[in-house]
Length: 433
Image (cartoon, rainbow, N blue to C red):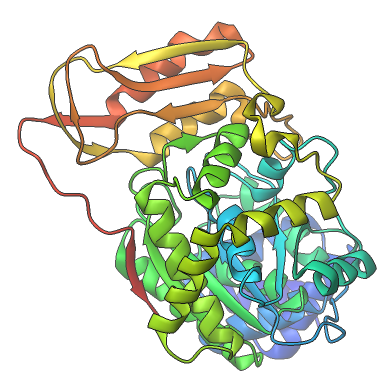
Protein backbone atom coordinates (compact mmCIF):
# COMPACT_ATOMS: atom_id res chain seq x y z
CA UNK A 1 0.00 0.00 0.00
CA UNK A 2 1.36 3.41 -0.98
CA UNK A 3 0.61 6.68 0.78
CA UNK A 4 0.61 8.55 -2.53
CA UNK A 5 -2.26 6.36 -3.75
CA UNK A 6 -4.28 7.10 -0.59
CA UNK A 7 -3.69 10.84 -0.99
CA UNK A 8 -4.72 10.69 -4.65
CA UNK A 9 -7.93 8.77 -3.89
CA UNK A 10 -9.06 11.29 -1.28
CA UNK A 11 -7.90 14.17 -3.49
CA UNK A 12 -10.29 12.84 -6.13
CA UNK A 13 -13.17 12.60 -3.64
CA UNK A 14 -13.16 8.83 -3.24
CA UNK A 15 -13.99 6.92 -0.05
CA UNK A 16 -11.03 5.50 1.82
CA UNK A 17 -11.16 1.87 2.95
CA UNK A 18 -10.67 0.77 6.55
CA UNK A 19 -7.31 -0.71 5.51
CA UNK A 20 -6.16 2.59 4.02
CA UNK A 21 -7.15 4.59 7.10
CA UNK A 22 -5.45 2.03 9.35
CA UNK A 23 -2.29 2.24 7.22
CA UNK A 24 -2.32 6.04 7.56
CA UNK A 25 -2.74 6.08 11.37
CA UNK A 26 -0.13 3.34 11.86
CA UNK A 27 2.28 5.38 9.74
CA UNK A 28 1.55 8.52 11.75
CA UNK A 29 2.40 6.74 15.01
CA UNK A 30 5.55 4.90 13.89
CA UNK A 31 6.70 7.97 11.88
CA UNK A 32 7.05 5.93 8.67
CA UNK A 33 4.85 8.49 6.88
CA UNK A 34 6.54 11.91 6.54
CA UNK A 35 4.71 15.02 7.71
CA UNK A 36 4.38 16.42 4.20
CA UNK A 37 2.36 13.38 3.07
CA UNK A 38 0.21 13.45 6.22
CA UNK A 39 -0.42 17.16 5.66
CA UNK A 40 -1.41 16.47 2.05
CA UNK A 41 -3.98 13.87 3.13
CA UNK A 42 -5.35 16.17 5.83
CA UNK A 43 -5.90 18.89 3.24
CA UNK A 44 -7.60 16.40 0.91
CA UNK A 45 -9.88 15.35 3.79
CA UNK A 46 -10.56 18.99 4.63
CA UNK A 47 -11.57 19.78 1.06
CA UNK A 48 -13.48 16.59 0.16
CA UNK A 49 -14.70 15.59 3.65
CA UNK A 50 -15.22 12.07 4.99
CA UNK A 51 -18.27 9.83 4.98
CA UNK A 52 -19.67 8.54 8.30
CA UNK A 53 -17.98 5.16 7.93
CA UNK A 54 -14.61 6.79 7.27
CA UNK A 55 -14.99 9.06 10.29
CA UNK A 56 -15.85 6.14 12.58
CA UNK A 57 -12.90 4.11 11.29
CA UNK A 58 -10.55 7.07 11.74
CA UNK A 59 -11.77 7.48 15.33
CA UNK A 60 -11.38 3.77 16.09
CA UNK A 61 -7.83 3.69 14.69
CA UNK A 62 -6.83 6.82 16.61
CA UNK A 63 -8.32 5.40 19.81
CA UNK A 64 -6.34 2.16 19.34
CA UNK A 65 -3.09 3.97 18.53
CA UNK A 66 -1.97 3.95 22.17
CA UNK A 67 -3.06 2.98 25.67
CA UNK A 68 -6.72 2.48 26.52
CA UNK A 69 -7.87 2.88 30.10
CA UNK A 70 -9.77 -0.03 31.63
CA UNK A 71 -12.17 1.28 34.28
CA UNK A 72 -14.03 -1.99 34.86
CA UNK A 73 -12.68 -2.12 38.44
CA UNK A 74 -14.88 0.86 39.29
CA UNK A 75 -18.47 -0.20 40.10
CA UNK A 76 -21.39 1.41 38.30
CA UNK A 77 -21.73 3.37 35.08
CA UNK A 78 -18.74 5.69 34.69
CA UNK A 79 -19.67 9.05 33.20
CA UNK A 80 -17.46 11.62 31.45
CA UNK A 81 -18.23 15.14 30.20
CA UNK A 82 -16.49 17.08 27.45
CA UNK A 83 -16.79 20.64 26.15
CA UNK A 84 -15.73 21.63 22.65
CA UNK A 85 -14.13 24.74 24.17
CA UNK A 86 -15.26 28.22 25.08
CA UNK A 87 -14.50 31.43 26.96
CA UNK A 88 -15.07 31.41 30.71
CA UNK A 89 -16.28 27.81 30.60
CA UNK A 90 -15.60 26.46 34.07
CA UNK A 91 -18.53 24.02 34.16
CA UNK A 92 -16.29 20.97 34.69
CA UNK A 93 -15.31 22.37 38.10
CA UNK A 94 -19.00 22.61 39.00
CA UNK A 95 -20.57 19.61 37.26
CA UNK A 96 -18.10 16.89 38.23
CA UNK A 97 -18.42 17.31 42.02
CA UNK A 98 -22.14 17.97 41.67
CA UNK A 99 -22.73 14.66 39.86
CA UNK A 100 -20.27 12.74 42.02
CA UNK A 101 -22.13 13.97 45.12
CA UNK A 102 -25.17 12.16 43.72
CA UNK A 103 -23.28 8.85 43.89
CA UNK A 104 -22.35 8.64 40.20
CA UNK A 105 -18.67 7.86 39.43
CA UNK A 106 -17.23 10.69 37.32
CA UNK A 107 -14.09 9.99 35.29
CA UNK A 108 -12.86 13.16 33.62
CA UNK A 109 -9.91 13.47 31.29
CA UNK A 110 -9.17 17.14 30.65
CA UNK A 111 -6.69 19.19 28.66
CA UNK A 112 -4.83 22.46 28.69
CA UNK A 113 -6.18 25.56 26.96
CA UNK A 114 -5.00 26.71 23.56
CA UNK A 115 -5.79 30.01 21.84
CA UNK A 116 -8.75 31.95 23.21
CA UNK A 117 -10.33 28.90 24.90
CA UNK A 118 -9.42 27.84 28.44
CA UNK A 119 -8.48 24.40 29.75
CA UNK A 120 -9.59 22.70 32.97
CA UNK A 121 -6.06 21.52 33.81
CA UNK A 122 -4.81 25.13 33.76
CA UNK A 123 -7.60 26.21 36.08
CA UNK A 124 -6.88 23.43 38.57
CA UNK A 125 -3.23 24.47 38.75
CA UNK A 126 -4.38 27.59 40.61
CA UNK A 127 -4.44 25.24 43.64
CA UNK A 128 -0.94 25.01 45.09
CA UNK A 129 0.45 21.47 45.06
CA UNK A 130 -2.29 19.89 42.98
CA UNK A 131 -1.50 16.87 40.80
CA UNK A 132 -3.16 17.20 37.42
CA UNK A 133 -1.64 14.07 35.86
CA UNK A 134 -2.66 10.78 37.49
CA UNK A 135 -1.50 7.40 36.29
CA UNK A 136 -4.17 4.78 35.61
CA UNK A 137 -3.74 3.01 38.95
CA UNK A 138 -4.09 6.18 41.02
CA UNK A 139 -6.92 7.48 38.84
CA UNK A 140 -8.98 4.33 39.44
CA UNK A 141 -8.11 4.23 43.15
CA UNK A 142 -9.27 7.82 43.62
CA UNK A 143 -12.59 7.32 41.81
CA UNK A 144 -13.29 4.20 43.88
CA UNK A 145 -12.45 6.09 47.08
CA UNK A 146 -14.23 9.45 46.64
CA UNK A 147 -16.31 9.05 43.46
CA UNK A 148 -14.45 11.28 41.00
CA UNK A 149 -11.13 12.25 39.47
CA UNK A 150 -10.03 14.88 36.95
CA UNK A 151 -6.73 14.36 35.22
CA UNK A 152 -4.80 15.60 32.23
CA UNK A 153 -3.87 13.07 29.58
CA UNK A 154 -0.81 11.13 30.62
CA UNK A 155 1.22 8.27 29.22
CA UNK A 156 0.59 7.02 25.71
CA UNK A 157 -3.09 7.92 25.33
CA UNK A 158 -4.07 8.48 21.66
CA UNK A 159 -0.62 9.41 20.33
CA UNK A 160 -2.04 9.63 16.79
CA UNK A 161 -4.15 12.61 17.84
CA UNK A 162 -1.12 14.45 19.20
CA UNK A 163 0.63 14.07 15.84
CA UNK A 164 -2.44 14.95 13.76
CA UNK A 165 -3.46 17.94 15.87
CA UNK A 166 0.01 19.46 15.61
CA UNK A 167 -0.17 19.15 11.81
CA UNK A 168 -3.75 20.43 11.58
CA UNK A 169 -2.80 23.47 13.64
CA UNK A 170 -0.14 24.58 11.14
CA UNK A 171 -1.88 23.56 7.90
CA UNK A 172 -5.26 25.33 8.33
CA UNK A 173 -7.13 22.01 8.55
CA UNK A 174 -8.47 22.27 12.12
CA UNK A 175 -12.01 23.24 11.13
CA UNK A 176 -13.24 19.96 9.64
CA UNK A 177 -16.14 18.10 11.23
CA UNK A 178 -14.72 14.59 10.81
CA UNK A 179 -11.28 15.57 12.06
CA UNK A 180 -12.73 17.43 15.06
CA UNK A 181 -15.09 14.56 15.92
CA UNK A 182 -12.37 11.93 15.60
CA UNK A 183 -9.98 13.97 17.75
CA UNK A 184 -12.52 14.45 20.54
CA UNK A 185 -14.12 11.03 20.50
CA UNK A 186 -10.89 9.02 20.20
CA UNK A 187 -9.70 10.57 23.46
CA UNK A 188 -13.04 10.14 25.19
CA UNK A 189 -13.31 6.50 24.09
CA UNK A 190 -9.73 5.67 25.07
CA UNK A 191 -10.38 7.21 28.50
CA UNK A 192 -12.71 4.33 29.33
CA UNK A 193 -15.99 5.98 30.37
CA UNK A 194 -19.24 4.07 29.80
CA UNK A 195 -21.24 7.21 29.04
CA UNK A 196 -20.27 10.58 27.58
CA UNK A 197 -22.06 13.94 27.75
CA UNK A 198 -20.82 16.41 25.14
CA UNK A 199 -21.18 20.17 25.55
CA UNK A 200 -21.07 21.43 21.96
CA UNK A 201 -20.60 25.20 21.80
CA UNK A 202 -22.24 27.44 19.20
CA UNK A 203 -21.32 31.07 18.60
CA UNK A 204 -18.28 33.25 17.97
CA UNK A 205 -16.50 31.96 21.08
CA UNK A 206 -16.47 28.34 19.91
CA UNK A 207 -15.68 26.29 16.80
CA UNK A 208 -19.26 26.27 15.49
CA UNK A 209 -20.61 29.61 14.26
CA UNK A 210 -24.19 28.38 13.73
CA UNK A 211 -26.63 26.02 15.42
CA UNK A 212 -26.73 23.99 12.20
CA UNK A 213 -22.96 23.46 12.31
CA UNK A 214 -23.05 22.59 16.02
CA UNK A 215 -25.89 20.15 15.47
CA UNK A 216 -24.02 18.38 12.66
CA UNK A 217 -20.89 18.01 14.79
CA UNK A 218 -22.94 16.80 17.76
CA UNK A 219 -24.75 14.19 15.68
CA UNK A 220 -21.45 12.98 14.20
CA UNK A 221 -19.96 12.45 17.67
CA UNK A 222 -23.13 10.84 19.01
CA UNK A 223 -23.14 8.37 16.12
CA UNK A 224 -19.49 7.49 16.74
CA UNK A 225 -20.12 6.95 20.44
CA UNK A 226 -23.12 4.72 19.81
CA UNK A 227 -21.26 2.69 17.20
CA UNK A 228 -18.51 2.14 19.77
CA UNK A 229 -21.06 0.98 22.38
CA UNK A 230 -20.90 4.14 24.48
CA UNK A 231 -24.00 5.99 25.62
CA UNK A 232 -23.56 9.48 24.20
CA UNK A 233 -25.65 12.64 24.55
CA UNK A 234 -24.91 16.17 23.34
CA UNK A 235 -26.01 19.48 24.84
CA UNK A 236 -25.72 22.40 22.43
CA UNK A 237 -24.98 25.59 24.38
CA UNK A 238 -24.39 29.23 23.43
CA UNK A 239 -20.94 30.77 23.37
CA UNK A 240 -21.75 34.19 21.87
CA UNK A 241 -20.73 35.79 25.15
CA UNK A 242 -18.44 34.37 27.86
CA UNK A 243 -19.93 31.92 30.33
CA UNK A 244 -20.22 33.60 33.71
CA UNK A 245 -18.33 36.80 34.49
CA UNK A 246 -14.81 35.47 35.09
CA UNK A 247 -12.33 34.71 32.30
CA UNK A 248 -8.90 33.53 33.40
CA UNK A 249 -7.70 30.68 35.58
CA UNK A 250 -7.74 31.89 39.21
CA UNK A 251 -10.76 34.09 38.48
CA UNK A 252 -12.68 31.15 37.03
CA UNK A 253 -11.81 28.85 39.93
CA UNK A 254 -13.17 31.45 42.35
CA UNK A 255 -16.38 31.75 40.32
CA UNK A 256 -16.76 27.95 40.25
CA UNK A 257 -16.37 27.80 44.03
CA UNK A 258 -18.94 30.57 44.43
CA UNK A 259 -21.30 28.56 42.22
CA UNK A 260 -20.84 25.50 44.44
CA UNK A 261 -21.59 27.76 47.42
CA UNK A 262 -24.90 28.69 45.79
CA UNK A 263 -23.85 32.10 44.45
CA UNK A 264 -23.17 31.30 40.82
CA UNK A 265 -24.22 33.33 37.76
CA UNK A 266 -27.45 32.10 36.16
CA UNK A 267 -25.88 30.92 32.90
CA UNK A 268 -23.30 28.75 34.69
CA UNK A 269 -25.94 27.27 36.98
CA UNK A 270 -28.36 26.61 34.10
CA UNK A 271 -25.75 24.90 31.91
CA UNK A 272 -24.24 22.94 34.80
CA UNK A 273 -27.69 21.68 35.74
CA UNK A 274 -28.48 20.55 32.19
CA UNK A 275 -25.15 18.77 31.81
CA UNK A 276 -25.57 17.20 35.24
CA UNK A 277 -29.09 16.04 34.45
CA UNK A 278 -27.89 14.29 31.30
CA UNK A 279 -25.04 12.63 33.21
CA UNK A 280 -27.46 11.33 35.85
CA UNK A 281 -29.85 10.02 33.21
CA UNK A 282 -27.03 8.17 31.43
CA UNK A 283 -25.94 6.61 34.73
CA UNK A 284 -29.15 4.58 34.77
CA UNK A 285 -29.98 5.57 38.34
CA UNK A 286 -32.54 8.16 37.20
CA UNK A 287 -35.18 7.79 34.51
CA UNK A 288 -36.91 11.16 34.72
CA UNK A 289 -35.35 14.58 34.13
CA UNK A 290 -37.31 16.20 36.97
CA UNK A 291 -35.97 13.63 39.47
CA UNK A 292 -32.40 14.15 38.31
CA UNK A 293 -32.73 17.94 38.55
CA UNK A 294 -34.18 17.72 42.05
CA UNK A 295 -31.27 15.55 43.18
CA UNK A 296 -28.71 17.99 41.77
CA UNK A 297 -30.44 20.95 43.42
CA UNK A 298 -30.35 19.13 46.76
CA UNK A 299 -26.61 18.47 46.49
CA UNK A 300 -25.99 22.12 45.67
CA UNK A 301 -28.24 23.53 48.39
CA UNK A 302 -27.01 21.18 51.13
CA UNK A 303 -23.35 21.91 50.43
CA UNK A 304 -22.65 18.27 49.50
CA UNK A 305 -21.32 19.29 46.08
CA UNK A 306 -18.87 21.75 47.67
CA UNK A 307 -17.71 19.06 50.13
CA UNK A 308 -17.13 16.70 47.20
CA UNK A 309 -15.08 19.40 45.47
CA UNK A 310 -12.95 19.75 48.62
CA UNK A 311 -12.43 15.98 48.77
CA UNK A 312 -11.37 15.97 45.13
CA UNK A 313 -8.86 18.83 45.52
CA UNK A 314 -7.41 17.24 48.68
CA UNK A 315 -7.17 13.80 47.06
CA UNK A 316 -5.09 15.26 44.24
CA UNK A 317 -2.75 17.11 46.61
CA UNK A 318 -4.20 20.61 46.29
CA UNK A 319 -4.13 23.21 49.06
CA UNK A 320 -7.69 23.71 50.35
CA UNK A 321 -6.92 27.14 51.83
CA UNK A 322 -8.05 28.89 48.65
CA UNK A 323 -11.62 27.63 49.04
CA UNK A 324 -12.12 29.88 52.07
CA UNK A 325 -9.50 32.53 51.30
CA UNK A 326 -9.37 33.52 47.63
CA UNK A 327 -6.16 35.50 48.23
CA UNK A 328 -4.38 32.13 48.36
CA UNK A 329 -4.83 31.77 44.60
CA UNK A 330 -2.27 33.32 42.23
CA UNK A 331 -3.10 37.00 41.80
CA UNK A 332 -2.18 39.90 39.54
CA UNK A 333 0.08 42.88 40.23
CA UNK A 334 -1.65 45.16 37.76
CA UNK A 335 -5.30 45.95 37.08
CA UNK A 336 -7.13 48.31 34.75
CA UNK A 337 -10.82 49.17 34.48
CA UNK A 338 -12.56 49.35 31.12
CA UNK A 339 -15.48 51.81 31.27
CA UNK A 340 -18.54 52.36 29.09
CA UNK A 341 -18.21 55.17 26.52
CA UNK A 342 -21.98 55.83 26.67
CA UNK A 343 -25.15 54.87 28.48
CA UNK A 344 -27.61 52.25 27.30
CA UNK A 345 -28.31 48.52 27.25
CA UNK A 346 -25.72 45.81 26.59
CA UNK A 347 -27.13 44.05 23.54
CA UNK A 348 -24.12 41.89 22.79
CA UNK A 349 -20.75 40.83 24.20
CA UNK A 350 -18.38 39.08 21.79
CA UNK A 351 -16.89 36.06 23.54
CA UNK A 352 -14.01 35.59 21.11
CA UNK A 353 -12.74 39.16 21.61
CA UNK A 354 -12.81 38.74 25.39
CA UNK A 355 -11.02 35.41 25.07
CA UNK A 356 -8.30 36.92 22.88
CA UNK A 357 -7.88 39.80 25.32
CA UNK A 358 -7.53 37.41 28.23
CA UNK A 359 -4.95 35.40 26.29
CA UNK A 360 -2.89 38.54 25.63
CA UNK A 361 -2.95 39.36 29.32
CA UNK A 362 -1.29 35.98 29.93
CA UNK A 363 -4.27 33.78 30.84
CA UNK A 364 -4.01 31.70 27.65
CA UNK A 365 -1.38 30.34 25.31
CA UNK A 366 -0.88 30.77 21.58
CA UNK A 367 1.21 27.59 21.39
CA UNK A 368 1.32 24.62 23.74
CA UNK A 369 4.76 25.50 25.08
CA UNK A 370 3.68 28.97 26.31
CA UNK A 371 3.64 29.59 30.08
CA UNK A 372 0.35 30.58 31.71
CA UNK A 373 -0.16 33.50 34.09
CA UNK A 374 -2.67 31.96 36.49
CA UNK A 375 -3.56 35.36 37.97
CA UNK A 376 -4.32 37.02 34.63
CA UNK A 377 -7.76 37.45 33.16
CA UNK A 378 -10.84 39.62 32.78
CA UNK A 379 -13.78 40.09 35.12
CA UNK A 380 -16.95 41.22 33.36
CA UNK A 381 -19.10 43.69 35.28
CA UNK A 382 -21.64 44.04 32.47
CA UNK A 383 -23.06 41.38 30.14
CA UNK A 384 -25.88 41.14 27.61
CA UNK A 385 -29.27 42.31 28.86
CA UNK A 386 -27.83 44.62 31.52
CA UNK A 387 -28.00 48.41 31.72
CA UNK A 388 -24.90 50.57 31.87
CA UNK A 389 -24.16 54.26 32.43
CA UNK A 390 -21.40 56.22 30.70
CA UNK A 391 -18.20 55.88 32.73
CA UNK A 392 -19.46 52.80 34.57
CA UNK A 393 -17.21 49.69 34.71
CA UNK A 394 -17.61 47.18 31.90
CA UNK A 395 -14.69 45.00 32.97
CA UNK A 396 -11.56 44.82 35.10
CA UNK A 397 -8.34 43.52 33.54
CA UNK A 398 -5.81 41.53 35.62
CA UNK A 399 -2.23 40.76 34.65
CA UNK A 400 1.34 40.47 35.86
CA UNK A 401 2.76 42.13 32.75
CA UNK A 402 1.92 45.82 32.75
CA UNK A 403 3.11 46.76 29.27
CA UNK A 404 0.06 45.64 27.26
CA UNK A 405 -2.79 46.61 29.61
CA UNK A 406 -3.86 49.63 27.57
CA UNK A 407 -3.62 47.67 24.31
CA UNK A 408 -5.90 44.94 25.65
CA UNK A 409 -8.35 47.54 26.96
CA UNK A 410 -8.55 49.06 23.47
CA UNK A 411 -8.91 45.58 21.94
CA UNK A 412 -11.84 44.44 24.05
CA UNK A 413 -13.88 47.67 24.30
CA UNK A 414 -15.68 47.01 20.96
CA UNK A 415 -16.80 43.61 22.33
CA UNK A 416 -19.71 45.37 24.08
CA UNK A 417 -22.58 46.43 21.87
CA UNK A 418 -24.47 49.24 23.62
CA UNK A 419 -27.89 50.31 22.35
CA UNK A 420 -30.88 52.29 23.54
CA UNK A 421 -33.31 49.37 23.46
CA UNK A 422 -32.98 46.24 25.54
CA UNK A 423 -32.72 42.88 23.77
CA UNK A 424 -33.40 39.87 25.97
CA UNK A 425 -30.47 37.39 26.14
CA UNK A 426 -31.23 33.92 24.81
CA UNK A 427 -31.06 30.82 27.01
CA UNK A 428 -27.58 29.34 27.33
CA UNK A 429 -28.93 25.86 26.52
CA UNK A 430 -30.08 25.57 22.90
CA UNK A 431 -31.10 21.91 22.75
CA UNK A 432 -30.26 18.38 23.82
CA UNK A 433 -29.56 15.67 21.25
